Length: 251
Image 1 (cartoon, rainbow, N blue to C red):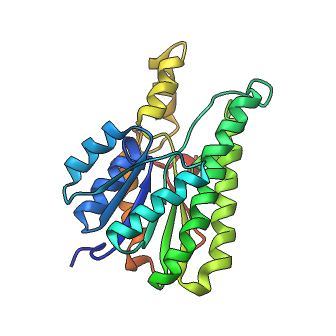
Image 2: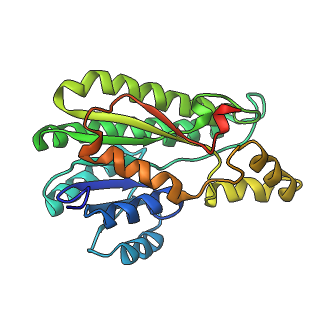
């Protein structure tokens, strides 16, 4: 039996990078999917690759109206909701002085407020299903900070503590909440970081050098843990912030 057979999973930021990799891994393990993002075309490409006719739902995770619409469509068409993967996120680079108010607000609206709104909104559906799993994609920078990541690190730190708080509050209802903390994974988001660098090749070498495993991460490196956390194999795992970081935090 596949690990996620008979489970319905909603994945935000599902069109590219880590979200795409998780969607494909969930599909291979038998989950029925609702793919959420802002760009319908990329979601359609992932749906085609995943097979099994996933729902494609465009929406803004920081909008309660969009969240209500997405959840209503998911449950009405797929029958239930067992797993939520909060993967949508944004990265602005800068120190506390350099980050603008607009960038700060955008970072927290998507990385924290949207995650909070969606997480609390799935609770009634998970209760009805007899429990569920919320998987938050945080970051190693929510555990240890780094230069020029003031807004991003602060937002991911908030995600980790919200994860732990919700795990405590809802564990008795068999609703588990965990966070995956990746290091530098090669996605569109991190590609943009390299592109904006004065010397992209040098920055890439620097990033590789701080990972003892000797390479940057791939989205697929994250997907396996996301499968585990969504499955019944992790039935006694909640409130965890689990690094998947090539040894970054060990240095």
